[in-house]
Structures are given as structure tokens and as C-alpha cells.
Amino acid sequence: HSIFVILSMNQPFHGDEVVFSESAKAILEKGVPVYDYSQFAPNFQGLWHVPTYSYIMALFILIFGKSVYSFRAVSAVFNLTVIILVYLISCEIFKNNKHREKLSLIVALIYALNPLTIQSSVVLDIDGGLLNFAIYLFLFLFIKKKSWFWLILSLLFVFLSKEQSIFYLFVSLLLFYLITNWKKIGKLVLLFVISGFLFLIIFFSYTSFLGLDFSMPFKHNLFFLRTEGFSVSFLSSLM
Image 1: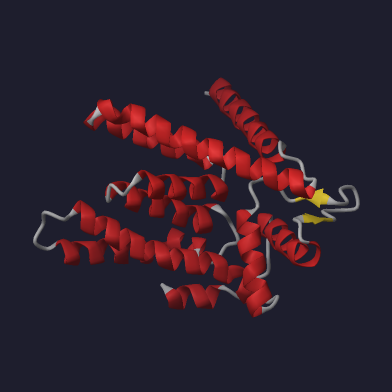
Image 2: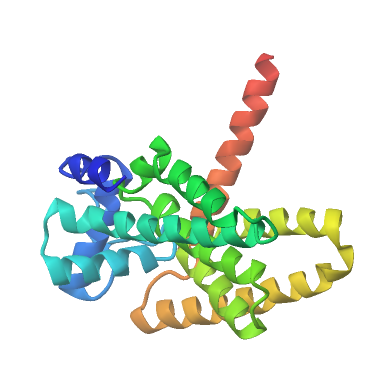
């Protein structure tokens, strides 16, 4: 896994990678993710999503310098930790199996050598790096039945990684409890409500203090929902 990742790191930035890299550099230079996106969009706020990923990337380039390896190392490090989490989660799933460690190692190996995992370890992207780690960390603590403190903290981390992803995580766990134990749905909803409320307070405080647009990530998500909805309707009309 690591060999494939290192050999693929020295690549120029493309698409959203440019946005993330510029946002991280702006944080180092100005303290905020605001930069000149183009001549038509000066002082652009890099808040398409909550900028946690950009701040972590800024920390990496502060420590290791502004090389392509420093930028790409963020996703690589997070994915290495995810491989460990996959192993630990698998151990919990196979805990009643006498071969659980061997089975868990096989699962982790399959995950590590998955081409999509290797790609996610190289690309500057929230989904395959920070978000992936945040969700697996929460699921590990969730399966281990940790205290509410740790569950709220880890779920808040998911919110702060990428706000829109929380919907898919909630629906997945909701379906799980509908099938296995519907009586726990109330606690699940309360867990997400508390974490979501804390997220809104933190993000509102952050944007207010720095004079940024609090609504920008939500407008961006709404735009894509409308775009995807239009695409689905258009494709349906052609079938």
C-alpha cells in the first residue's frame, strides 16, 4: 500500500485539489481560507465545506514545507490509520471466531490493497482522507459501545470533517436499528441532534469571529442536491 502511494504522490494538482491547496496556503498566509479564486472571484472564501481539512493541510505544510508530498501526505496518513481501524473493527465483528485475528488481517489487507483506497491516499480530497478516518473512528467507538462523551465527540468530528456526510451515516445507522433493535432509535436521534447542535455552535462562532459566510457550505450542498435532482429527472425522462 505505502509503496504504491509514495510512487503516485509526485503528481500535479487537478480540479478540487487546486482549491484545497490554495485554501491551505491562504490559511498560513492570512489565517483564513480566503484567496483569489480567479480574476472574477477575488477574496473567495474556501468554505464549500467546513474547512477542517484545509486547516490540517496547512499544519502539514507548515511543518514539512510547501511540497506536493506535504499536501498529499494528509490523506495518506489518514488512510493508514483507517487501515488500522478496519482491522480493529473487524476484530470486534469476528470476536466470537477463534480465527478473528487472521480474518481481521485479511480484511485489512484487502482494504489496503483496494485501488480506490490507494487512490484516496494520494488525492487531495475530504471524502477519501479526513472524512473516511472520522467515520471509521466513530463506527469503532460505536461498536465498542463507548460512553456518550466519546460518541458525541467522535460524531462531532464527523460533522466537522464534512457536514453533508452526516445524513448518509444517520440513515445507515437508522436502517441498522430498524432491522436489529428499533427501541434504540430514540438514543440514536438524540446523539445526532446533540452533536449537530454543537457543530452549528462551533461553526457559527468560527465564521462570526473571522467575518466569514456561515451559510456558504449549506448553500453549496443545496446547489448540488438540486443539480443531482435535475440530473436524475433528466435521465429518467430519457429512459
